[in-house]
Image 1 (cartoon, rainbow, N blue to C red):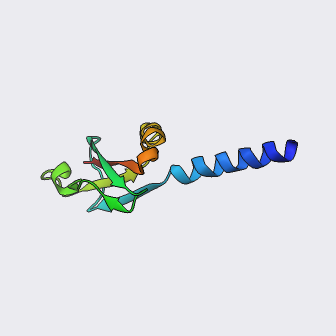
Image 2 (tube, helix red, strand yellow):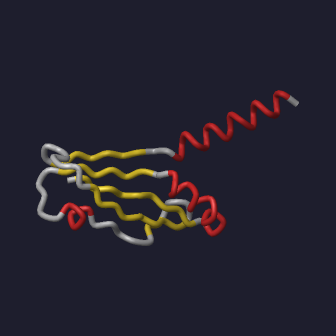
Length: 97
């Protein structure tokens, strides 16, 4: 009984750790001011095919120095719980000037 509980907890912990991936890209000198702008990127077939394009240059505007962060947020996790049934997933793309 204890072994099944521990195994179940390990599986849940691994699932949560894998889901919290963050990718950062620094353009120029990075963010100079704290002006974040976010959009949600949608994928089908568990991330294989993008459903929309997030234009990071458009989010950055005329800024030459900014940071791009792509992550699965807590809200994305909640959305993904519901939409995983139809193999749709989301990630948040944030550009900070």
